[in-house]
Length: 84
Image (tube, rainbow, N blue to C red; front, side):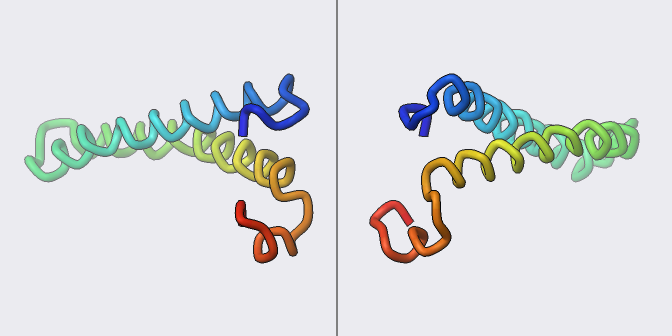
């Protein structure tokens, strides 16, 4: 996706998309362990994660949509091409 034109747009979007995935996925294990062990502060950790992840997921989704539009171009390409 980062090799698609315009690269001035796709390269940063691929980075934003990857960083969003890394943040989200990286937080799940500590969050899950804290909740499973019922550690002190686990509920507060969940509350902070819930607020922090909202803009991350919004950026992740926006970057993904823009990259998909650049790559696919038309909805029919989702069915008619090897990429889709």
